[in-house]
Image (cartoon, rainbow, N blue to C red):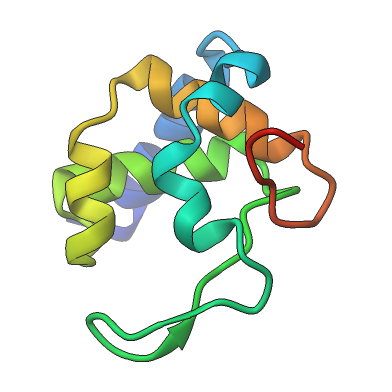
Length: 113
């Protein structure tokens, strides 16, 4: 794909993503059970498939989070655990989780707090 076409596709995807209805943070808090086990523990490291620090999601831009989840679901991003979790999420689930984490100012969010 030419560089120009790739740029046009990226801009179009960004416009489409931002045109979606905003997610519901309260609903995202209720759907957070799969996320909080890793992303809700400050300083957590995982050992599968390799040892690394798990990224904090709190405060991330919702469009970025939705795009990342879609990429995991499609296989564009390669991480076995995230791919299996994202495979179970609907588009609305992704929007809701993104809204929940976006409103959590900079820290890891944990359900019930």
